Figure 1: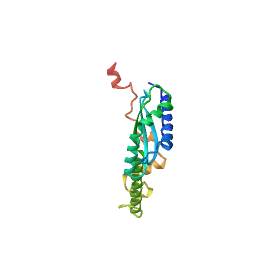
Figure 2 (figure 1 turned 180 degrees about the vertical axis):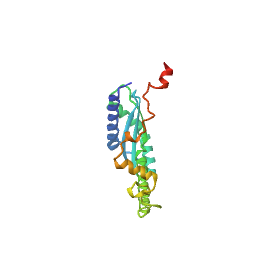
Figure 3 (figure 1 turned 45 degrees about the vertical axis):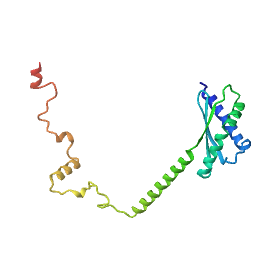
Figure 4 (figure 1 turned 30 degrees about the vertical axis):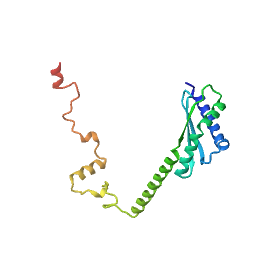
Length: 185
């Protein structure tokens, strides 16, 4: 197994070599407007997959694939000379599906944006079915003077009584005293 840096360097060298060959040396008329997008090499440097895109119709893509299949031997021998390694990797060409996937993704996003805009226009003038603020708010005017809860509210707010005075302390015994403490002893 080669280290990752060497694999990356070999892949870059293959990319440059194949691009140069397709640009100048291979003169197949079936070869369309081709772009090498990526080269992936296995860790043992035995196989290289070359990803490409073709600008044009499906027929031009098929013709380009046929031209690449027929030129694979020549491309592999030139890659072997350029790399200068003991074993030349086998080469496979694969049509890169990333541009079509990216286009489909962009189309889906555009449709979602259009639906969001349509929903925003639909609900632009909408109002709530009930009150605009359906929650109760505590106002001082909300209680009646004769209500017991209101009277407790007023006495607690008046500041005359403290919390200590409001509690009945006649029945209070500290812990550890009284009848229960004598039974435990």
